[in-house]
Length: 440
Image (cartoon, rainbow, N blue to C red; front, side):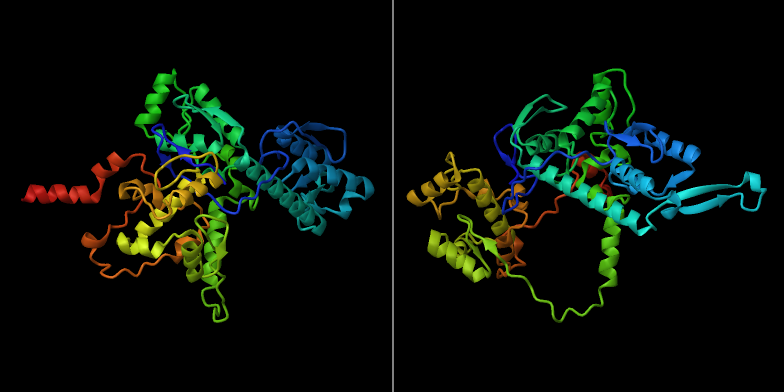
């Protein structure tokens, strides 16, 4: 499970969901997508070799010296291994057994005609090799991502305020998003996080803006520029950052926008399919206090009441909780127990087992703190992203339209609120209010 963010005043900040069950993974570190590497690229025909970052030089060498072209090089997940494989195959059989031959100046004089070989995935053997390398790279990246998610030895300073963070990378990333309005995405979407942060820190050390990538004369000028221009974000068009996002490994050669658009097209194309035989999967909701799972809402509510004395229906009735208030209450309790803290009295314990023993021994199961403690916007975010218990909550309140008497309006939480003040000043609603006041 990923760790939650903590602000300087000790309040919890939920900027990413946890997920259960937890599956730790220990895997070897893998080289990142198209990143500079010390690996050598070896020519397919001669001893010529160059570092991976100089691959264009070797491709030019293959073209000029050996009349061979490799198609769609950018789609090859592991170019050094790809080159070694075909070097071995070309020692076994002539290159023309594998490659298409292209004749240039076919209508010109014979002495000016040249034959070039094209190595591409039209050849089944080449296509299988590319797919195998891609699958292996994806597996390595996912193992590395899981290793980073579970790593508790992370230690780094914030790039903007030099505050020190230890334990898990999410604490630093959430701090930068919350305190400095600088977000590079959810921690669980990022891989090779240390390299990513090193890259960003190096740009700042070189007095370069992370967004427009202009260089400034000193740190003070750079800081003022990034603040005034709202440039505390990375340049999305800079392909240097692609290797740090897991989605870019799913289908090499395609951006996440292209992958998303393909998914959308599939949904549109399949909208006329017959769904009459579709069957829903069981709910499989997890108990608030133990690892018990139930497949129906009646079973999970019954377990909570009989096994732990927690009556969610009673709390809903006594406190007149609407649907989204129930959501916040469940997420609050989940978060407190995850942090080994009693949700009733806020006492902190050394372990989850200790806090659960305390809750039972002190009869704090049905004890809730003041509503202002848990009825906070941060608890709209699920503590566990696959928390099926949230799907079983009842939203069939009587008098649901009477929001002023029974509950609250549900806010729309923007994804980017870094420039909220400017947004309010420029909003259409603000303009209409000004016009109305001027008319009156």
